[in-house]
Image 1 (cartoon, rainbow, N blue to C red):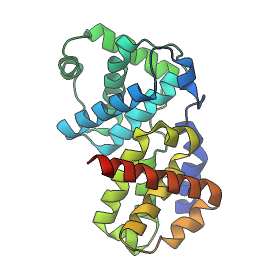
Image 2: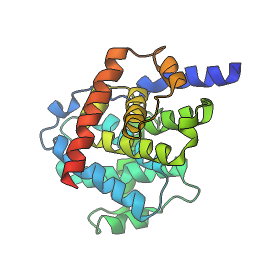
Image 3: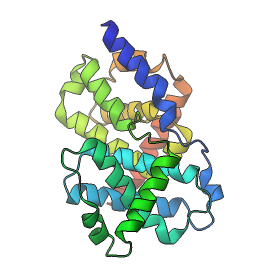
Length: 236
């Protein structure tokens, strides 16, 4: 039990590492904006699905991209797709059993970038984020709740899958990255899924999150995610 608590405490205490050091870093980007981010994140998600990669690779890749851009002002738009591809490539090395070769990514980018371009961008990326790839993400917290909390909600595979999907939708919108910690987004996803299915919100999860975050944070995130989901559903 003590080991479980130490692991949970460790994850919560490290989640600040997943946040961009400069929350409003888009103000320092002249050629890029949050709309460009949404387009690229959608593209990254398409690669994940097309090549059947792990969801963790996707969350790590998006996180790498945000943290890198926060520390790299005036990044050129012409290299933005290259950055996204390198983020997936780098993340996959930590997650996938057999990660994709650089040649596959060169083809995905229609030959716009050379092998040397990929190597140089990866070097810049890893040096900038200080080789820190495995940080607590929204997905990590859903997995934590599922594995560590004995609640019937997390025994329902459909509910858990929907929590994953809600977290994926959340990180498409940079407001969730800028304003909320990964654990808060994960809890907001669980609350919205529980409400959608008319289930009780897992009490042990709420007891846990209130040790690290406030009711106001969670309420704001839950409401924003609810609005975000409605807008998304209206576009379908």
